Picture (cartoon, rainbow, N blue to C red):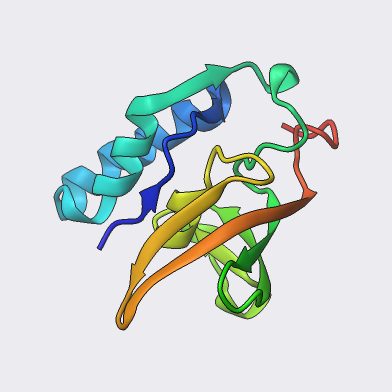
Length: 138
């Protein structure tokens, strides 16, 4: 099931875009379209920026993000990573996971929806705790 995002624009760095397009192509060749359909759709609508043009409130690859569930107000933190670096124990979530795809390119205050086994969850991007571009790492 793929996440649904509010219609806000998303922002992706040129470097992330290049790497993500290569990931989409490799995944498509290895596994078909279904695994990467949501990410592919998000990349099609992304506004591309140089790393030094990205505002510090935008979720980029390798950003650590705090999300808040709108109904229960429960919080959790994740770091968006490329698949080889995913590690659920340290909350490093693959960009191929629905939650990571949903928040990529969002800004603090944006809301995202994605389906769960028993309904749908709506989260808001509460804070960016680390963003590589803001830290001068890209």
